[in-house]
Image 1 (cartoon, rainbow over the protein chains, first blue to last red):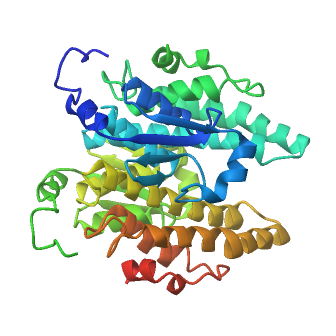
Image 2: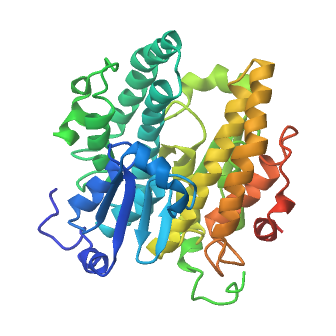
Length: 204
Length: 204
């Protein structure tokens, strides 16, 4: 990050604000839809309570949990609980100076995140919502031969360099890291990150 | 909007910024994923070129279009084209003063939008991705008896009033309007907006 020594691009006020907050992130003990948020908060050195449920415990306790949209992840900020993983991630990005103040840079970072979510959701659909083995294999064939190569090529073309929107790390770069480590690494994915050198360079 | 006469909540600088921009929104001639963006820009009286393709014309011209993620909607801002409908909507909301400056209000508005997108996607899945009539009916049964009532109840509970995040209209309220007019109105949806008086009051 070329600007790490400068105060121009890094909102130095953010950590002070974050310190005053009492944060609790609730999810399962897997990366899933919470790892992006965990990485953002960790990157920004923001303290938070990282509550992880085993699946049986979650379902046993679900009725007593504060779940605004009936699902996890949730983020409690002081006394209010918020839902929806991407909305929480964007908030975490703002706390940690990883959400661009410039609206056009934010549009670009938001678009990259939405594109990566589409790919993540395609894998979730194949893994968790397709019990039939042949149908699952057909979905992975589409993922490996069409969806992933096409969209990763499109994402590669968006990299202005060294990061997605230029010189500053944004939450889109952090999500790419999560995506490479936790989605692209799935045993049934045959697409290699190294085929996309600009993306691989962000992750490295 | 209680604050429309005041300069406190409405960023008066935004329209000036927007006026300097040359904007073109490209999509099909249906509400779909672009109507939210059209409504936001119209609400903010931001001039934009509203390019609408008939489906055959779109597919005939697709290879010559500038489509960052291979799909529409796209928004061209001066000489750069951006993709991903929600990212574009959030940018349009910033241009028109409908995206909260306060990070927690923005988190709440973003979460409402993401929840409504889940409902919209469930209908898109049933209508466009389920050719088998019996399977389509089964999906609409789930939508009508489970997904929609549950999540609309959850959304109703989030309304601080008179709008989702309090006294100011945000892009979440505009998306609810679009959702009521263009998704909830689907012939196969039996859930009524009037069963959710706080949501209906926002739309009215």
